Image 1 (tube, rainbow, N blue to C red):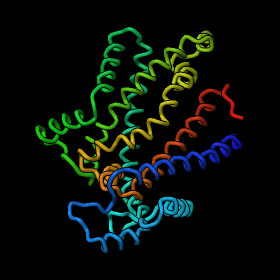
Image 2 (image 1 turned 90 degrees about the horizontal axis):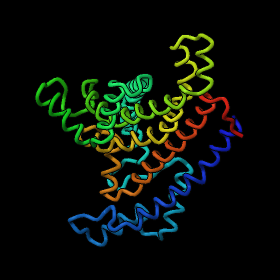
Image 3 (image 1 turned 180 degrees about the vertical axis):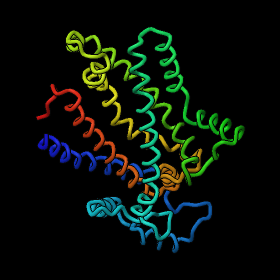
Length: 305
């Protein structure tokens, strides 16, 4: 296992290299620039600004300079925020997005797994149909619709929760629920499908034949195999719940990294866009590695070489 993990970590290097390279040249080839504005700058001023940020150099030299900075964990200065580096911006805003995403994912697992298990154990019952119908609704409705309904009901009509902000736990309730609903529905459906596939296996019948309590059979034997689809989903889902928080952060006025990513793309803030891409890509690659390692815990038959 340690050797496998070491190999996977080494493969991260060329993957990140390819992602950074493609993103760099795509951004530089996009129309417009970070210093284009409604007010046209004098040529001398624009030339001085471009020289300060090395934009007067060839694109190949800019690329080599940027890659050298990335190797030293320096993501460069922001082109739109004076006297602020990309490292500082990510350090200030990324923890907010991570906290929002972690709470939403925890809520999705806390509700989705029990709902899926209950539906599987009561297959083809009214409870099963009801749970899957609710899950289908959760998958089908976009985040911005859910957010609008929750804000209208709980903020504007009932006045129980604030409309926007990120100052207290009351501000967190609506965005966390909004962001988690889609993933709760997906986890519930995957849990149900995985458990239905497992509970009819021979080793489950053997455990029951030994006289084990049904709860013991479910928790110690069935769940480990039944949750494999959920674990498979967790890697991309965790990255998706962070990148997918862009809309939620915008609606609820949350100062996360998602909002900064949107503004940086609109402003052609090359370094901030690339820094955010590197952050999300690294996070996704590491999470996929964690998921692969979890496979060996859930199913001892899986071995990595």
